[in-house]
View (cartoon, rainbow, N blue to C red):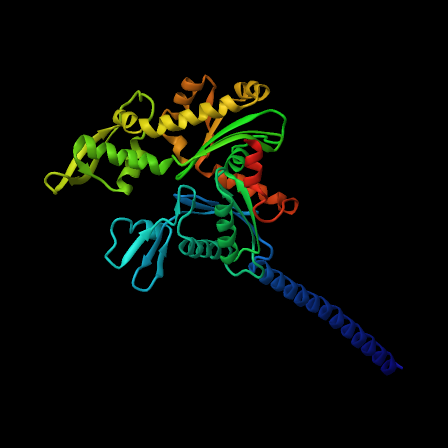
Length: 388
């Protein structure tokens, strides 16, 4: 009698073991399936499907904003080319270090001048390099929004769109610099209240009054950071008889550039070539001298700001008096520029936080509304004619 009972227990134990093994095997399969799903998700994620990017295509610097990540790239708009083979050697920071130092067969160029494309093929290669650097392996080409000066022509608009498309953009959208700068500075451009923005970049200065999501009055002039550098080079040559290069002039501008009396006068030693002897020479320049050196381009900008204020509707002028003028761009960082503008216009002026990146940040924030925007030129030139 004991034997059948032992057999029943053994059979019962065997069935329990089989059930246990089956239960243990099921989660293992589920885990493997989940791992496969995760790996596939990671694979497609790495391919950057439908990633939108915003580009501040500046004369001096290119900034790239990736949706969901922020600004991921900030490099000079410089390309080094081998003239013998027409091959692109370096792009960005590495190419900038070559400016004024290249041998005969290598040329370091800036393919954008005064806010627009001056060398199409070089700009195309530069855009391809930056898009690939920021997006990596793209399963689908990204949608790209590019910031342009408000005074750009239809031909120049088309050149930007074509270059972006050939560089790998699936769709290209344009946004005007003052609009992007205002959004990046944190202004509510969609309210009925008027806001005034002065964006001083490398190639252009854009001045605009915005309200209800659009530009009411605007002015764009080709006087900005590059002209400041030229003015400093000219001043040093005329006063000291010393020749300096663009990089040296930019260094002076960044270190002691001023347009208003500085309470603590700063000085900097500059190395250049003596025009009479042809030998190296070291001179000392003060921030006080910069006021004189930069007088001409600064005066031209102030005149245009006053012109935009004259053309602004009276109702919006009251808003601007209340809200003040906001300055963006690298040129706004010259010491005392906001104080000088306040003195000349009588309107309180401030420099935006992170002024250099405002345009790129505003372009990036506008990526959220891409589905509501038409592709291409969006008739910016026609809209400007209607505003005049």
